[in-house]
Image (tube, rainbow, N blue to C red):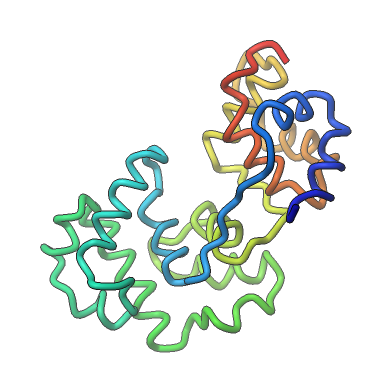
Amino acid sequence: MKYENAIKELQKDSKLKKIIDDVGPCKIRVMRNRYEAIIDAIITQQISDAAGKAIGKRFRDIFPKYPLPNEVLSTDDSTLLSSGISKMKVQYIKNISSAIISNQINLKKISKKEDEAIINDLTQIKGIGRWTAEMFLIFGLGRLDILPLGDLGLRNGIQTLYSFSEKPSDEIIIKIAQKWRPYRTVATWYIWKGVRNFKNV
């Protein structure tokens, strides 16, 4: 099992162990197409997972197969908008596509860099913030130790898991997650998937 070591370590946290036992094996799907991963991260900005999947599917259905950056750039905005992607996100998608074509961003070589260096590179592109870059690190590169502090699902999950009366601060989340290193990505995934079932863990 790919995440066996991560699960073994994370089960030492009694609260996470209950979620892991309920959810079962970790099934983080890392996309082979890194361009698709960054586009998906843009599409899912500030919307629900279900809405993101639906819009992502309609975007893919526009093309015979997953498009290349130049194919996206040559597609009319109105066509892209028909998938349900907002006008602003269409521009963001074209921004990253242009950056790839100009070699400002090289998705083939980017995996050789450290997490923070990748985040810094990607956030130079208008429309890509830290959260979007972190989702790319998780679902595009399979990085195991990402803690997306700006993710509402993670923040809400930790609030529920630890019975906080209000949203925990970044400092509190970082302190809690310290014991999950170097597998904070996997811990985050379990919180996304399972914390709703554990109001009293």
